[in-house]
Amino acid sequence: GMPSDHESGSCEHAHDQKVTKPRKSKSPDQEDGSKSKSSKTDAPLRPRESTEKSGKKKGKSKKKEEISADDILAKIAQLEASSHVGAASTVMAAHAPPVVPSKNIGLHIPADLREKFLNQVKITAQHKREIDMHQAKIAQLQKDREDILEDIEKVEEKKQKLDDLCKQLQDRNKQILENVKDRGEDEQKERKLLSEKFSAKITEITKNMEEQQQERLKMASENDKLRLEIERMKDDIMAKEAEFNVQHKQKEDGVTKLHTKLQNVEGNARAKEQEFEEWKGDVEQQSGVIEELRGQLGTYSGRFEAFQGTLARSNPVFQSYKLDMDEISRRIRSLEHENAQLRLKTMKLDIAIVDLSEQRAKDIKRLSKCEAQNLELHNMAKLLSDERAALRVQDKN
Image (cartoon, rainbow, N blue to C red; front, side):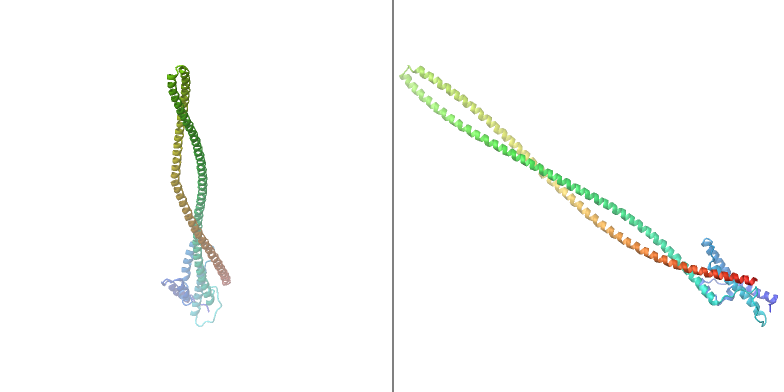
């Protein structure tokens, strides 16, 4: 029942011709779809293509020690090729009965198991691509999260600076208000003290003027009295002179007595005149004092007018300070509005970070699921490899 050497050689020659026949490159999906239909013609070529693909993938993944799905497909294709070569040799035997598989006949894997395995390999590759995409997305999300954290730190720094600036402005505003209040109180006290001093001085000057007026009136009254007395004395003297002249004519003996009396009267008159001159000097001295007091009153009036001018000049300064305070208040309100906007932006960033964290947790769960499926496929591939090794040992025996 074994085929002859000539038949085996012709079969191998036909097999070599099939191998050297040029083929168009197909996509992985087309190759997987046509594996079951053209397994006899494509089987010898697949191991070489799969080996090249697996070599490239191993180079990209830094030559991992794990058995890839392409290696498993290549080895399965080799087994099928050897199986088809043995089958061709048996067909060439004329109506030969079925023979027991020898060491030249390989393992024949059922089509459903092979299709299922290929589907699992496709799913594994798809999961791997999805895992790579998710890892890229996770890396991008991590980068975005770091950028967001940097933006948040910058916003926090700006917020801290704005808070410090607001505190400084509030402290400065409070200090300025206290200084203005203290200055206003001091100026009010000074104005009140000056007003009291000025009122006291005016009262004192008025009182002195009234006293001096009373003294002047008193002296004028006394002067009137003296004048009347002098006039009366003059009338008396003139009357006495007339009487003396009459008596001189009538009585020469009483001339000496009358002359002496006249001298006494003249002495008294001179004394009265001297006293009148003294009173006149006092009146002139009092007039000088009045003029001096009037000059002091003019001086104090000038000082009061200067003080009023100083108060009038201080009003524009206070208005300018009030305008500066209003500007600072508007600036503080603007900073508070900007601070509120920054707080709102920070809240939005926190919400975005929470959403990214939830998406990252979902991606991690999905990645864990894909890793579990990948582990299951690796275990299945390991089982198939063990079975293939066992079958090889059995074929050798």
